[in-house]
Image 1: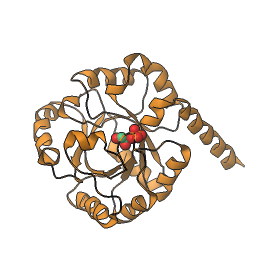
Image 2: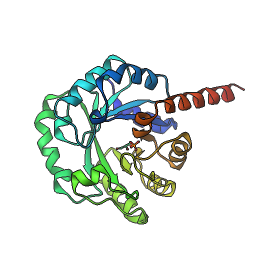
Image 3: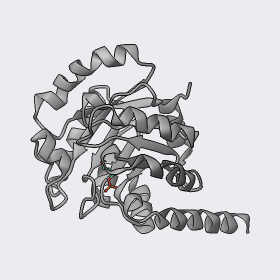
Length: 252
Ligand code: 1GP
C-alpha cells in the first residue's frame, strides 16, 4: 500500500517539488486514458488527482481503474461530492472548504461520506481547501454557494490557512479555481507558506512553466494542473524538455 501523505511530507523536507495532474472525469473520455497517461508518466508529474465539481455517479470509479492500468503514480481523489468516492484510488483529499461558510462543505458532506470511507482502504488526508478570488466565478463557487476570499485580503487568507492547520488538517490547498484567469499570486503563496508547518498545495490557472516555477519559488510544495494539460497535451513535452535541460546543466 502506498503511503501517500508520508511521501508528500518527505518530499517537503527534502525540498523536492511535486506536480499533480488533475483529471476531471466530467471532461475526460475513457479512450484517451492510455495515451494521456503515457505522457503523464514521461513528464515531471508525481501524482494524479481525479475529481471535479460535477461528475455523474459511477464515472469516477471506472476512470480511476482505467488510469491505474497505465501508471504507478499515486492516484488521489479530489472529490467535488460524496458520489465520487471510489476505493480504487490510493488516497482521498478529505476536503473542508474553509474559505466558505456553507456547513455542508465544512461538516455535512463529511458525515455523509463516512459510510463509504469506513469500508474503503483509501488513505484519508484531511485538507483545508481555500478558494481565492481570481476575477471570474468558478465552478466551486457556484456548486458550493460560497464566496472566495478576496485576493487583496492577505491577512484573512493567512489566518484561514493557519486555522486549518491548527484544526489538525494535514494539507492546505490554495485554489484559484479550474481554468482561473489568474493563478494565486506569489505574494499570497509565500505569505501563507511562512505561517505553515504542513505542506502547501497551489492550483488553478497555472498554464506554463514560468507560472509553475513561480508557484514553486513562492513556496508551493505541490502544484496542481488540469486545464493546461486538457487543452494542450504538448505542455507535457515542454515540462519534459525542461527536465532534460536541468539534468544536463546539473551534470556539467
Ligand atoms: C482545479 O486547482 C485545480 O481545482 C487545477 O486548476 O484546471 O486551472 O489547472 P486548472
